[in-house]
Length: 393
Ligand code: HSE
Image (cartoon, rainbow, N blue to C red; front, top):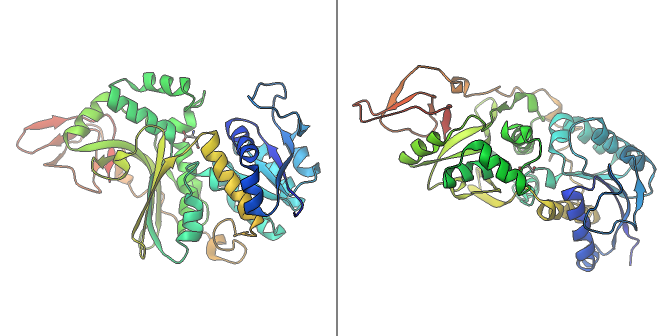
């Protein structure tokens, strides 16, 4: 059999350990599919002594992941440190400089530095794979970049943050307030100890920015993604939404307009019978509209060690199969992607709350923004005040 694919893992949190467990448990299937074994040759994490629930003493240990990426003899570095800071970035840069492939789950790094990293990996002839960065176990990157590649995508919308979906589902179902459900989510391990990026919509904004770039062949422009979280939603909002036949979901939306693109994340009212309305708790969902297939709906776990680890391992198999796609779909070195395409900052400019302004309508309709003050029915049957503005989709 061919020599093993040598793997170095930077970051041994939930996803790192999930990945190592899949590599261990499925070693025979993977070796058969890849026609060579997968071998973890080195690991790096912050705390060597922490109990991780599995034996990692066989792997060569590095305290410094940046040094590991530069020094260790391997074929691929899996970057699972997270964040857009220098450590994760330098792990990738060092690995690329040494001609090693990168597999990562780091959406923040890609949203802020993805274009630069895609360029250098393409120039170096190494792969930069990130299926695990968006919606965990849902194969949305491969779906957009490969399965729908013949096609022109017009719109993507999705539930891209499991923490927010868990909190919104819990508030609606159990009638508990935002902070109580957030605490439940933290106890169950869905929400981070510092959940700011989740509840402020930043994590979902990283993800929709990446999907938008892939779908529309435009540069990764995180600064042009309108971002609003769920922390101002109150229990009354669910009651009012339900009376009109809506549920509340935090959606990431990317849409092709005539001469520009929208990228936005904010709470939406979605019809109770829509696909995304039925996706509750920590699950994620992505709905892709295109000109040939029509509508593709993907639903699954968007986080967690095993689902996200499965996406990492699928990327490792791609490497073996020689499936070295340009990271952003088409070549960043030769395509329009390097031009500065004007992305509309936020189409919903009127989305901002207009205090005290009363919008009168008999029933909310698609595409309309309900302000935080809303009067339903001009004949005075009902009058509701939502706590924030909602876009109806
Ligand atoms: N904090 C993220 C979520 C994890 O809740 O969806 C996966 O990116």
